[in-house]
Length: 69
Image 1: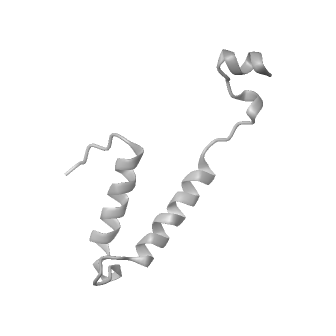
Image 2: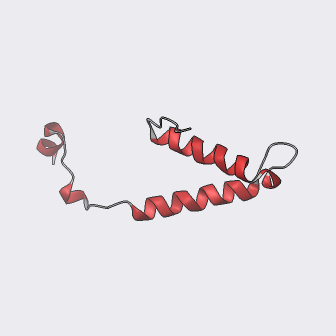
């Protein structure tokens, strides 16, 4: 069943939940899962690394900040 993901936080929560569902053997009795946490952290690193970057010169500043420069 498709889930309606509206925000980035929804996507992160879905990934968090799905990892634990797909790999219950990774979840400890207390509910913690260092292995799942590690996979989530690595995914975040990859997502951040794949995001386009811009120099500060290309970022539009509000008028009040431009006039203060």
